[in-house]
Image (cartoon, rainbow, N blue to C red):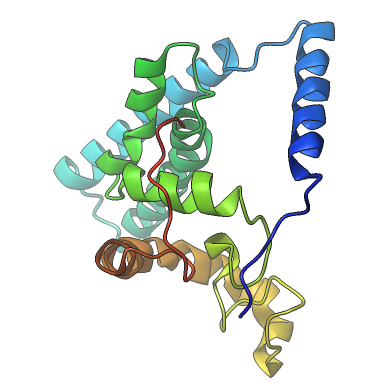
Length: 200
């Protein structure tokens, strides 16, 4: 596969995009980092995670179905922390304070992942090669799920809208116990060597 290249006008485009974005936040008097809504969401999700964990470990429900339901709910809470807390922290947009961003980013480590590898995979790889087949590791979930026109189509993809939620819910374990280890020992993400991020 040929390596992806960027047009010579790319720096001009990104500079103009940054100027327009900065102007939007300034004109609308918006913060580029989280506010009370995000902090409240963090507190609610954190309390829900601790509460569910305590109930499941120390007050295990007698009904297996209730226990499974609480486990599924806890899985949703964990995913919500990843999408709402860790993601913003790792991007440096959770707070104006760098140490707060790093603390929120490290919630991923608390949940079993690794924020250092996540930053390489997401901040450096995904945001450089967004939706470029063969380069963006975030869309490499083939052959089970097809998310790009350049990926091979199989007959079972017509049902992926049905099974994708269950499959996506189990990929966290695959990500932690296989993908992260493969990236770490090979030193590659989507067949290229990433540069360690200095900033989120």
